[in-house]
Length: 226
Image 1 (spheres, rainbow, N blue to C red):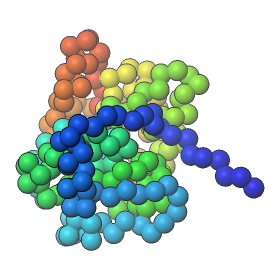
Image 2 (cartoon, one colour):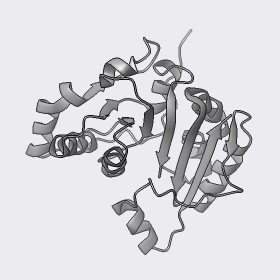
Image 3 (tube, rainbow, N blue to C red):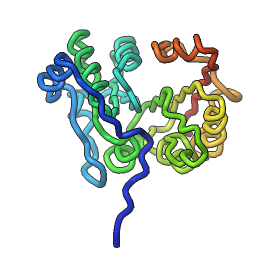
C-alpha cells in the first residue's frame, strides 16, 4: 500500500542566498531554529524549546519575519514559534533575532500542517496567526489553501480554550471562503460579526503596504476557541 504525499499549501521553490544569509544560517541555526520533518514524531516540548513556560503563538508563514519580530518585541511575555519553509526568509529572520536580541522567538522549518498534525499537542497554543497566506486563486488549487473546511478543526484543536486564530488576507474571495470555513467550525466562535478591525498588535508590513497601494482591501478574521 502506497502513501500519498501530503498536499502542500506552499510553492516548494528555492531562493538564492547571499553571503550574509548563508552566514546567518550557519552561525545562528542551532541557537534559534530547527527542522521538523513530515510525519509522526514526538511532540515539540515547547518549554524546553524556549527555556521557560509562557503562552505560545504559532506564526504560520513568517517569511522574513517582519511581523514576527515586531509582535514578539511588543509582547515579551509571550513566546513566538515562527514556521517557514523558505530558507532565505528564515535567514533574514535569524539575522533580525540576533540584531534585536530577542529571546522569545524560535523558528521551525516545516510544513505547518504537518507540524500541527504530528508535533503540536492539542490545547497547546495561545494563538495562531496566518497572515496573508497564498490564496491559490485557481479553483483547481483551492485544496492547497491552508484555511479551508478540511483544516479548520485541526487548527482549532491546537488552541487552548480562549485562544485566538487570527487570519488576514488581501484576496476578497479567499476572505469570504475563510469566513465560511471558520464560521462553520463548532470549536470556534467569531469575535465580531463578520470581518474584524485590524488588531493593534498586527503590524502593517511592507507586503500589506503594497497591497493597500494597489487598492486591494485587507480583511482580518479573529476567531476564538470555545
